[in-house]
Every structure is written in structure tokens, then in C-alpha cells.
Amino acid sequence: MEVFFVGLSAITFKQIIMIIVGGVLIYLAIKKDYEPALLLPIGFGAILVNIPFTSVLTQVTDGVTQHGALSILYEAGILTELFPLLIFIAIGAMIDFTPLLQNPRLLLFGAAAQFGIFFTMTVASLFGFSLKEAASIGVIGTADGPTSIYVASRFAKNLLGPISVAAYSYMSLVPIIQPPVIRLLTTKKERRIRMDYHEKKIPKLVKILFPIIVTLIAGLIAPVSLALIGFLMFGNLIRECGVLERLSNAAQKELANIVTLLLGITIGSTMTAEKFLRVDTLLILGMGLVAFIFDTAGGVLFAKFLNLFLKHKINPMVGAAGISAFPMSARVVQKMGQQEDPSNFLLMHAASANFAGQIGSVIAGGLILALVK
Amino acid sequence: MEGMRSYGIFSKEAFETFIQALDVTWKGMAGIFIVMSLLFVAIYLLGKIKHQDQDPSA
Image (cartoon, rainbow over all chains, first blue to last red):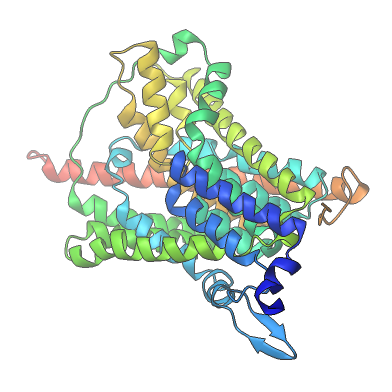
């Protein structure tokens, strides 16, 4: 009979905590709708790997190696950086950059709202993390899960679990995190600023050239960013070229769904009790929040700075949408704008800044890879 | 629960890493602004070319 209780008798207190953590993530995904496509597989993966003698992880028993499915997926998809890159093709195929092409000056907000990444990196370094670990923690502030995973898989594989959980959790919490920061940094008068919107038809040629030009510029300045930006723009080129509709649909649906599924559960497999239940995890979760707060502040304060020189003022809230969390951040700005003035429509401007944030976050990830030795 | 950080909090090594992080910070922010500014110029120029194409007097 003992054989039936081998798992039960071997389970540790830490593993029980991790199974509860997995359950909480599943609860948040189902009940609160917090990034369910990622948090549910991550949560279930966390449960799978914290059951003693689990066969989903590679185990050595009596000198014989038994390969586990999640260990194989981790080696094939995360260590090779393949899963996040494939996700980028899917994301690129989903994005319509038209609002950004109509209003390119908002590209600068995609740069300013990356401030939280670097601020958090410096804070993390003071807490004793190595530069590579601190950079990986800072990249939570890209508000871009695949970039966070990509950088962490290169620089800090030991922190991959908590960084991924923080990145996806805070992305879903953008509607809670951003409004108080925006209110703190803006006056009521500033939040009521109206911005004209003129819809402009963007020629197909421009839409096709855009991903190629982005790839060339980003790649020539930071070649190490090419894997990130190149796959994102490849997906976008498939979408915009007009002759690969079938591939574009496959990238947006089948590829996105399959890789998201595998990515989530594989990230969950890194959440073993001995790796996750550490003081560092709490620090990383805390610093991830700091990154999102200072991203928002960076965007808002940059807009206020620009307004010192502009005749037609920018609503500073639009700066907050310069993070990558699309469309949550744009919706937050639109909603806050309408709370101040129901006839003020900021959605298209905020969406433009949000698209800029998607490009900016990937470039930031690439620059971190290039600059941190 | 134990930590796995490389150095102690606010230790000498941490301050040295902090200085390196500051160096990466200014270079990183400058790099992002340079890339985004170049993209802005590229999109602006693309818009101009199209505008000239459409201008019947051109």
C-alpha cells in the first residue's frame, strides 16, 4: 500500500504553498479575468511541478534519467528563446500600426514610458542583484511578457518564474496601477485638454515599408535587438503585404494560441518551491510594480515637458499610454478623459502612444541586451 | 525563505553595480529616443513622398 502514498508522504510545506500559489493564479485567471491565457497555464504548471516525484520534470531515479515533458519544452522553447520569438510573430500579425502612422509624433511616448525599466534596474542593483539580474527585473517594466521572458532567459534563468508572473500580473492590473499615478502627476485642467484628431488614409506602400524600416533602423543601431524587433515586424509585414492572408490568419490565431499555451505551462514549470519561495521573489514582485509606476510617470512627465514648447498641447494622460500593455493602457486614458469631460475622446491618441509603446518596449529590451555585459 | 541575490543589500558591490546601472540607464534612454526619433523622421518622410505623388501640380 505504501506505493500509493509515496507522493503524499514526500510532499513538503513549501510545495504545498506553491500548489496554493498555483491555485491562486488559476483563480485570478478564471474569476478576475487577469490575463487568463497566461496565468491559468502558469498556475497549472506550478501545481504540476510541485507534486513530489512529478513526471513532468526530468528525474534521475537509480541512475536512470526519465525525461519530463515540461523539462523538454523548457529546453526547447525557453532556453532556445524560441517561444517568445514565435509569440512576437503572432503579435506583429495582430497589430495595425495605422493610428501610429497617422500621428507619428506620439512615437516619442513609446520611448519616454520605458523610464521605469531603467529606474527599476538601478533600484534592483542597490538591493544586491547583479547587473544582469537587475536588468531582467527592470524589463518587467516593458509591460511586455515575451520581452521580459526573452531577456530573463538570457540574463537570469533563475529568476524566470517570478519575472514572468510579475510581468503578466501587472499587465492585467494596468487599470488599477495607472489611474492613481496619472492623477497624482496631473491637474484636472491638464486631464481635460482636448486633442484634435484628423483621420488620414495611410497608403498601403507606407504600411508595407514601415516594418522593414523599423527593422533596419533598430537593427543597425542595436543588432542584438534584431531577433526581438525582427520577428515582431516580420509578423506585421505578413499582415500588411496583402498577399499572405492565410499566413497572417494562422499567425494571429493558431500560432498565437499554440505558443501561448506552451509558453504559459512551461513558465509554470520554473515555479518549483525551491526556486520560487525566496525573499527575492517578493522583491521582484515589488520592483515590478515600481517599474510600471515609473513607466507611467515617465510618459506623463514627458508630455508635460513637451507642453512647455507646444502650441497645441498634448493631454499628459496620453503619455501614460506609451507602455506596451495594449489595449488596457489606451482604455484607461480614454476612460479617465471621459470622467473629466464626457465629450473628450482621447482613444485614438492613446492607442497611437500604446502602439509606440509596443515598439519602444521591444527596442528597450534589445538595448538592454546590447548594453548589459 | 532565503535569498539568491549576488551581493548584500546596499553593499559595496551593490553600489558598484548601481554605478554600472546608471551608465546603462542614460545610454539606454538615449538609445530609445534616438531610434524612435529616426522612426519619426522616416514616417514623416514617407508621408511627404506620398503627398508629392498625389499633388497634381508636382
